[in-house]
Length: 169
Image (tube, rainbow, N blue to C red):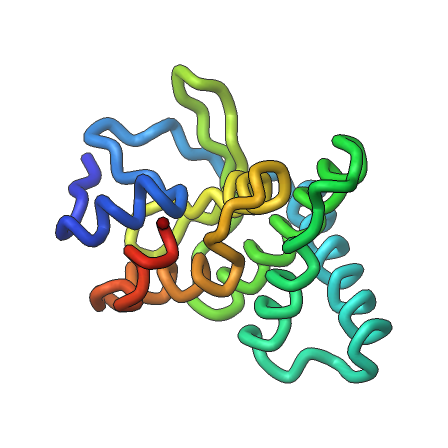
């Protein structure tokens, strides 16, 4: 049984897309072929960054802030193009989370269906594709960089960034 932490963790869970349910979903490792696909999506995102900016991303922050900028104006895209961005950017976010904090790709099954995410070392699942979909399809103001900072706070057991409430509004 997984136990939610402080109220801040609950706020982060509801806003940012982490599992903190009393009864966790069934969690299974993701297949090697899906992991390889996620890795290739991250590589593609890095190539796009290089093409746009002229150099490799030096830090996770640099890449995440670039992703935030790329997703500010997706309202003119069709659903197919948005789906492609969700897959690419969600995979890149997940790979960055795994590289920075550890964890592994998983597929969760619950009464609401299957979802892919990153099982964090603190036994919470970060649903990175859900975050990407909210950002891209719903113009959610909470970006990839903010999500990454929130993952950091969960993994390190520290309060979330002080401006979480402002980001939610």
